[in-house]
Figure (spheres, rainbow, N blue to C red):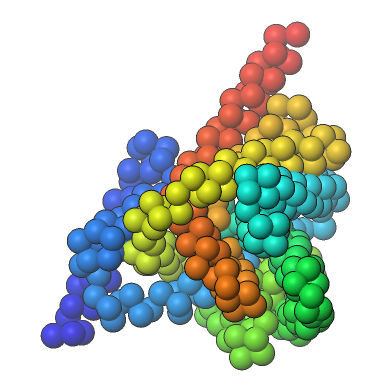
Length: 397
């Protein structure tokens, strides 16, 4: 009977995913938001109809789905793309991380929060959700510099955020009078080790994949790479996101015998993403938004402002078209698992503040995970509209 319930539940979740896909196409609402909404309704915050056996798969599905996302984002960092968009990718991603850290931290401090907790929350606010952003880009069908630059930014900005968070943890330890460089060395190990693991898997894969048939990698080859990368990353306590991205970058730039290294991952990714987003929604607790009160509202406002300011400034430095500059920050609003992971680390390091950090992070993640993809979709739409108008004006002249 349990097996029947699991199979019926999975079939129902796939039907919900199909419905979300169709509604998204008809209304232009982000599929991610629709799937998360389905999860919230079906999960503990709603009718609580998802069996615990299915919910137990969330960790596995999230790791597989996010590793696939990392591969695809790494695959977008081709030499050609980096030559053309490398400056905007680096300038905007660094600017957004620094602006988020500064504005959220200072803003919360000015409202009366302890500067040490404010710094930690500012660092946590730098995290984004590459899965949601990438899916909105794909759903929009947008082409051109803006979506390509966005893909490059979400491929690396969590690495910058992780570095910033680790430095802030060390600073807060210093402010508490208990200097601790262990976190910093641990991050250096995680970043360096993840890149090294990606290289160890990526270089042989760049030579071997796609040699069996027609020059394009087989579906089984794509799955093997995903599972090997994720598995070794977890075993070695490294970042499967950074390792997956590194493998993607290496294969897409080193493999000369095929043109679309991750075509098969694109084909098999969506079923995993459906289950991932619905179960992610089921794990969210919207009621916690009430508990965080006005400080949660302030955090949301400061993070929104900081993303927009940082995105505009980085785009200004990089010299991107004026019509695109206001929209990079808005397109990078989604926030998910990386932020919660940072919050868990901070809670373990500073147990006296654990309740505040976890409540605020989880509560605001609900907000940004549900409404963030809509902001991304809106930003892409505005840039497309502006580009269309520019084309009309140029044709008229």
